[in-house]
Every structure is written in C-alpha cells, then in structure tokens.
Image 1 (cartoon, rainbow, N blue to C red):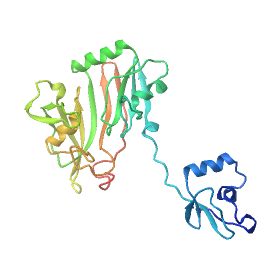
Image 2: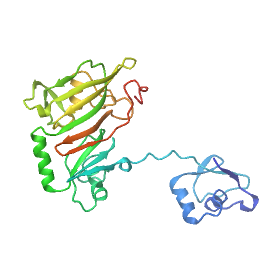
Image 3: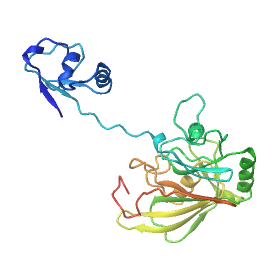
Image 4: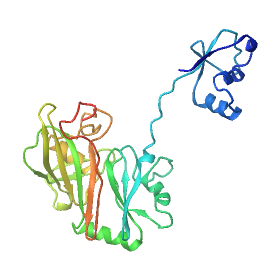
Length: 282
C-alpha cells in the first residue's frame, strides 16, 4: 500500500486536496474516481473528502478486493455454421432475458454478438449450467431445428461431476413433473418418449472423494432433467444447490457438444477430472 505523510504546509487542508500527495499530477476527474471506487485512509481510518488533515498524519489508499468479472464478459460466439450460431454461456448467467429485469443473458447479447442477423435463441441452459446455447439466424432455421429435436435428431452431450460411483452406463427413463418452476419432480413411471430420457456413462471414478465424472446424453430435455434424473439415481451433481448439497461455488454440469444434421459444435469446460482437486474445486 502506497503511503505518504502530510507535510507542514498542508496542515488543515481538505482531504480531497491532500489526495494529490498520493496521486501527484492527477486531474480532479481521476481523484474523483478514487473517491467513488475506494476509501482514502487517514492513519488507517476511512475519511470523507471534506475531512481536514493535520501535519504528520499518514495518508493511504485502501486496498480493494479485485472485482469479480461479469459473467457476460465470458459469453462469446463459438461458430456460425449455415443459418445457426453456437454461443458459449458461462455458469451464473441466464440464457434468456427475463421480462422486467436487466439481468445479463445470452439473449440480450445476441444483437452485439451477431449484429444484423436477426438471431433468436433456440435452446436454454439452467442459470448455473455452462456450455453451448444455439441461435437460429432465420425463422426457417429455427423451425427446422425444432422439427429435428422433436424427431430425436438432435444430440446434446454434457459432462457432469457427481457424488457417488457409477460403474456401468445407465439410462434414467422416469417421467418428470415440471409444473413447479422451481424444482422438477421425478415420477415413478417411465416416460413414453425417449426424448426425455437421460443416458449417463462413467468416464472416471475418484475413490478418495467418491465422485464420478460422467458423459451425459439427452435428445430434447426438460427443465432440470439431468439434475433431477441423476439425483434420483443417487448421483447428485457436485455443487447443485437444489438437488444436491450445494457445496462449492459452481454447478459441475457443462453442455459440451451439440450436433444435428449439418451442424456440430463443441466447447471444453476445463473443470478437472474426477480426482483433480479438493471439495471446493474438484
């Protein structure tokens, strides 16, 4: 921390004037920015700009915590293929804009990421889930995608880090009740449509932490489908605050690959393998 001592000739000066001792040659606008973004300390205590300083007192700028990057800063265009565009959504960001709110979302960013293309969002990910979201660049492309999805022609591949051990591939076929928008309920009977089934394949097991890295494939998907289905078979996703224990700072579910006729996009998440770290950063 930079620190200066108030000289005799500045005894009784206002603190905003004395601040030039810490920021020599600065303009008023620069000093005003300091007041707006961080405290100025006098003998270790934060003081207002009208405070009168005394000779011999110590002035310093309070160390500020680094600002967390906005999730919107991490959202980006991955590729354009024909009339479709794949985009990356980070965890902690909405896919679609929410009416009446100014929350960052991929949908709000579409005009900037795809200027003049009339892009419309075609799929969504949960707020905490990272990975690929798809945009259609024409009404015809949007209609074709939904037709392919309804016909089972779209493959959505995820990676999930879960609590527990899965030794063999499993397909969870239970029907889902999504009437409660907050939490999806898994029903006892089987869903007649394979479009709503969840197939999980073990990739790696970490015996020390009892968790498994999974490849998960769905075709169409329903709200919270993967999260609810995996928790139902006693494999809750690490970091899931709704269907698991909510430990750590993120949900370890990532939509890494999306493919259908004439289109394929992939993006790596980068979260470590099953045995790659501690509880807070698996």
